[in-house]
View (tube, rainbow, N blue to C red):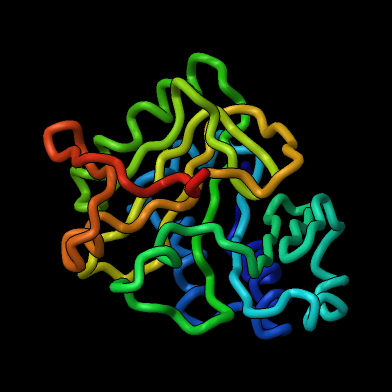
Length: 229
């Protein structure tokens, strides 16, 4: 994917104009283009990126979002808008993160940017090598990581992919927004999906939440990550 600063700024300006991005969140997205971005090779090979913004009531703002893209998926409380520039926008009020199910975790005011997604749809050998190298490299740079998928596809937000790496930026760094690296072709689903964004392992440690985390040597029992059935 060929992202430029001008292209990305123009897209962020349009999204911010309807009140969906703060200045800090815009800076987090622009950090994708920084030389130190730990997933630069995945970004270069990606088909697209997406910004997932959480709101209290999607229906009340739906009319203001029409100019931000073409609706690809629209369900109750969930909207994915495609853009020709490859910077897609998701706006939702449904449950998409484990954080919402843990009373001890702090709540963020909405609207807020929940995560930035890098859509690595190509699952050929070179892409596989890039994806597999991401988590060790990110941990070396003090990012925390959580892996989903592999044996089973990751199903969330009316679609599924083979695997995901979630990367959480250093606590003392300039960015705060988690990254989702989604690997494999996107397959449409009928339901919202059972797999939620995992809790940041650092937050889990601080608030005594048990989650799958980090590297194999630091793994913990999985108690979150899927909706109860």
